[in-house]
Length: 515
Image 1 (spheres, rainbow, N blue to C red):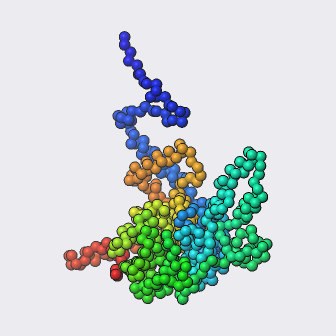
Image 2 (cartoon, one colour):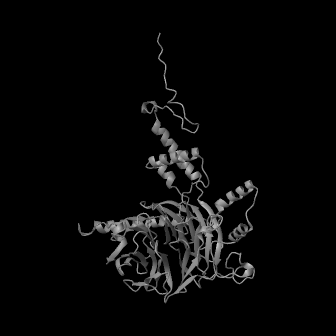
Image 3 (cartoon, rainbow, N blue to C red):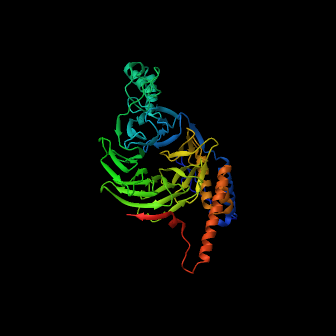
């Protein structure tokens, strides 16, 4: 009697080291795995429910401002520094890693701080106010978030101490003095310090003898009109400001604007933004409901589009620099392609109040919006509805929103004097994840993407618990929309055939275009 036995080569099935992956023999034939799709669908439903269970988007609140937070800016090349400006003229710099303010100046401007931006090199930041001044302040990026620029870096400092202990010696007195001097510094260097407070942080708490004196800017510019907004060039030492009559381009080394663009009309300009790729392209929003483009190389205006209502904010897509998004007074966000301003490429709906601020993720796939309805919404760039809606009981009108440089967190500033840090994905885990946990999360995300079209999963993912006010306003807007659609249908029904046609919603957004 012959018996056939499995014969395997030992060398092919033995690992060379204990860290190698074990070889697993599997038969991938579908006939040996019945009900595979049903099992995957069940797991996808469970994953969707677990996402809602573990959805805890709120991370922390940054307190310190005495009045509403009017504007904010994050460093484009660093994670931790974050600058905010208040309605009372106070400017603060925050370390997002420690969630503390490392510098503040209560008298940075006399009146509303209208705009803040970080320089292209990350070594300074600029503020513009209603007092017709722009000021430049030094920003020590390397000293925020536990990193040092000089001497013993914090990551190498501990290693050096251990080496000294092994050798039986200790560091010299000069090195210890340098380290103590660096530990006493903060991220911002203000004005001159007295001998009694040379090592104290310049927090700017007035003329208190126990505190450092009020910081002084390293540069300042004075103009004829009050500023409404400002933005810095992505690579060069230029910045642009928006005022009551024009858009100005400034150099960091000149006292007067090097270029000035009068608008198509006499209305003031509310927002100005530099394009991240085209070095000479500017976009602005004006009070006459217009969106305009300027070319600084030619010194002329390119295009202008007038919408039905005024736009309050504008931001360029960092990864698709031909596209930008504007937040409008009609509660919607509109995506435009600068090559064709006849109509928006996408309408993003969900807010029930005027959209006041927008911030793009560094990936270019999502943006966050803050509204007058006291909510923060996250939209995908090619989706008409929001992916998430964040709110708290105490949060008031949201004036400014920003993504962090790693696109993991969102920072919002509101009328209740607080900055709030949110997760970009509400169910993300903060901290280190194990390998098995990471594989499980990736597998569940793939299942959700595979079955996202199924009604049950779609309903679970889109379900959001919203405040009573938001629900009422949303239902009211739906009734108004149905009434307008019914009226338009009756007009077409009782008109001569072919004389009146259905109007597209994207075409109704734009009133006229000017060159």
